[in-house]
Amino acid sequence: MLNEKVYSKDNQEVGEIELSEDVFSVGVKPQLLHLAVRSHLAAVRSGTASVKNRARITGGGRKPWRQKGTGRARAGSGRSPIWRGGAVTHGPHPRDYAFKINKKVRRLALKMALSARLAEKRLKIVDDLDLPTVKTRKFVEITGKLGLKKPLIVTGKQYNNLELSARNVQGAQVVTQDSINIYDILRHQELVMDKQAVEALQKRLR
Image 1 (spheres, one colour):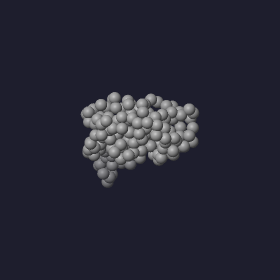
Image 2 (image 1 turned 90 degrees about the vertical axis):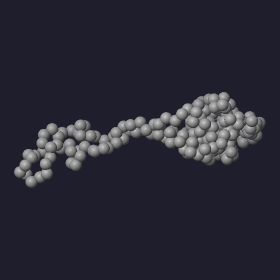
Image 3 (image 1 turned 180 degrees about the vertical axis):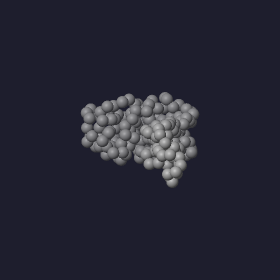
Image 4 (image 1 turned 45 degrees about the vertical axis):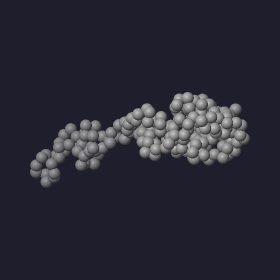
């Protein structure tokens, strides 16, 4: 087991917590993290780009001009892709970009991301993160005392006041432990977790 210090919102040491080596001391494989990040980004990609093919273009029911004798090239429809306002050939259509990775691989990648933040001294554990009222200034004051710039804050349960206070702070994000993902962990400079989140994650990922 690993022992990590627990801090208050005023950045005062208030105790220690035991971290499971099975979750926070896992060897990091960059290629596996890369795969997990690709899978996450592909899953959230909208995939709504679309163009009209010949069947969806208005008009084109009659032949624009007779076949011979005009000196023009042959034309059978105004919906042809070579005409302005015509169809688009081989254009994009709505699709799902998501691809599946095994559940065990996804769990292992999450453990690696957590382990990497701990090894880099970029993981901070706080005893309690709830706020009595919605106040962005109070949130900025707390993050300043904790020495945070662009943190991902993970809580054991949903704190509406904390989430609303953080939503206007650039670079800060608040999520619950059951919605944490590898991409968010890696793209933020610091990872902050409360004790409830640590205990719940260790129970879930062991």
